[in-house]
Length: 466
Image 1 (cartoon, rainbow, N blue to C red):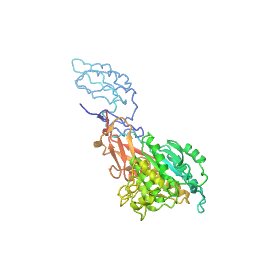
Image 2 (image 1 turned 45 degrees about the vertical axis):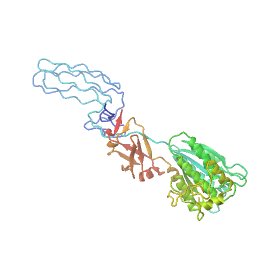
Image 3 (image 1 turned 135 degrees about the vertical axis):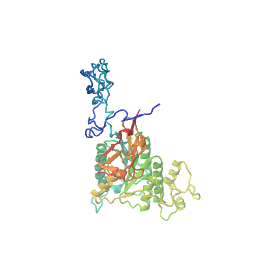
């Protein structure tokens, strides 16, 4: 049984009307015409006569109406023994069938009647532009709401909350039609709700709802805390239950060190936060953190970033070993509760059972983000860069059919008009017959906030249709 046909086999013109007329043709210059348009009737072929007699006239072609044309009425017989040349094809997508050839007189057969409008079968289609779609990523922005976020910085003369709000709303407004944004604010109080959490669910075109959310959120009275692990757990559960396609991501924004709402040992809450982020990564949820001068150490911020990217995390406790951390955290209510929630039991004498997180001798190098929020323009650019970094670099073929990996060598992919090489490490490549992925600098360029468009152009024989 024969496999799928290529576009050239079925006589397919360019899919992009924007291409110049004739860009897909060899000798013909017919532009693309939608299907279901009647092909023009082919003219009767003429041939030089070797003997006297008049040439037969071509029969008229019936309208194609998207299918085969009705056979033309036979032309009257000519006197020539030499068959006339076929007339040029018409401009319809659907080929009309040629008229029947009547026999001439004794001198010989009449010239063959030209075919009705073929869909460029003989015009040598050279390229087309398939349609690709992206699965919009989901980005949940998790905002620390503890008291320090609402305190005016003496240098910047602005609160961290207000500075972040300005940058977030600007970036979300620009990216809201390609990214599903949600937002939540968390804090907690000793002896009270921990976490205290309120949110707006992720959605496309969500800038208006998120703006309204910001307008209703203020500081919580009394002493407030930063129960980071507990808040991440709530968001993780919501994203896991979210049935939308596309990547799931969290941007944690905080200027407070993680805690359990109990002013306990910060090592224990940090360990729980790294462990929670690692668990989210294992579930396919990426996490990045923007630190607003919280006093979190470089090692701690790097460990959270690596955990969020699914990379190895080095132990972030300074000179404190995993075993010492275990002894110092044992008996801390919040830390013990994390072990119970994980269905595991700590054992300070057994390697691998001393801390909640999984640590390696050498950690990865995921990007880390800090800001002192004193430069609003710089903060805006930083936030836009982080949010853009979640944009998907994979594209799904929406055009019917699949792409032949062996026929895409001459394809051209452009980002904002600049060609991207075909490469499995630094360019574009097919990860399946229906998926194209950008990697390396190509993915970085696509994710830049200023990037506007990507285009695809493939040879016609690359698309296989059933």
